Structures are given as structure tokens and as C-alpha cells.
Image (cartoon, rainbow, N blue to C red):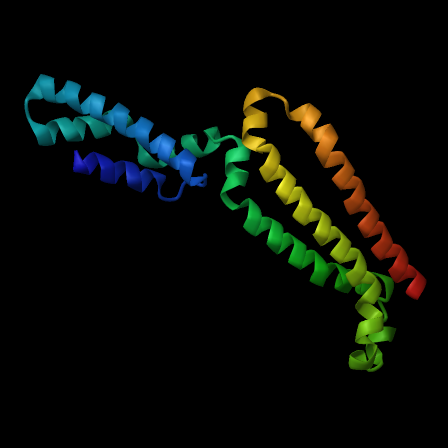
Length: 189
């Protein structure tokens, strides 16, 4: 029996899912394997042989892992790392988008030829303000997604109403923050 648990844990080790979903899958796989083991043990009366036959009945572990990964719904994938991903995205947008806009709006690097230390605040102020608006809105989007429990919405097919009520207004706020950042940067030039 311990071999069956080890085999299931190896299958689930690299599966990308939330811990709750992994536990559900682990329970189902173990139940299936134990039933197969008991059937084979009743037929062969040899514990090692029954364990081997039960594992063969389960199939190729790599293929089973791919099938399980393909069967995990999107909300369960997002629940695994939603907060970390949101924080990384907000920080990247605060730092990288102003640099991208500078390189796009000033390809000859005229601004960067001057003393960058002296002009740093005036250079990044409009971009930073817009990105802080975006990061602030992303933070509240994360809180609202937790509050409305996206997984239950996907399960009950009520996502359309919740999408219209929550995501679209925040999308407008995000777009307005980006537009402010672009207009402030363009007016600076």
C-alpha cells in the first residue's frame, strides 16, 4: 500500500494545481489504485504481484500526469499562484513600462545623454504616477477576485454577470492609468 502512495505522489509532484486540487486528485487516484490492488490481490493472493498489476492497470505515469494537467480547469491553475503573479506583474509594470516608453519615444537617447541622475525624478514622475494607478487597481482586482471566489463562479456558470460588474470597471481604470501614463510622458517631450 505504501508503494501505491509513493507512486501517486510521484505523479502529482510536478502537477501545476492548487494544493486543494492536488489533494482531491491524490484521493481519487489512491482510491482507484486501492480498488485495483484489492481486485488483483483477491485474484492472485500475492501482495507484490497485486501491487505491480494495479500500477500497470493505472498506465504510464507521464501520460497520466499530462492528462491530469490538461483536465485541470483554469481557475484552479490561477488559484495556485494568483497573488505572487499579481505582485510580480505590478512591479514589472512599474519598472519596465516607463523604460519601454522612453526607448520608444526617444530612440536617439537624447534624454539619456544628459545627466540621468539629475533628471531621474522629472523623467520617471509621469510614468510612475500612471503605473502606480495601475498597480493600485490591480491590487483591488486581486481583493475582489478573492472576495467573489472565482472558482465557485466558474463552477456555477455565473461568471458573466460577475465579469460585467467587476472586471470591466477595473479594466477601464487600468486603461485610464495607462493612458494617463502615455499622455503625461508624451506631454513631457
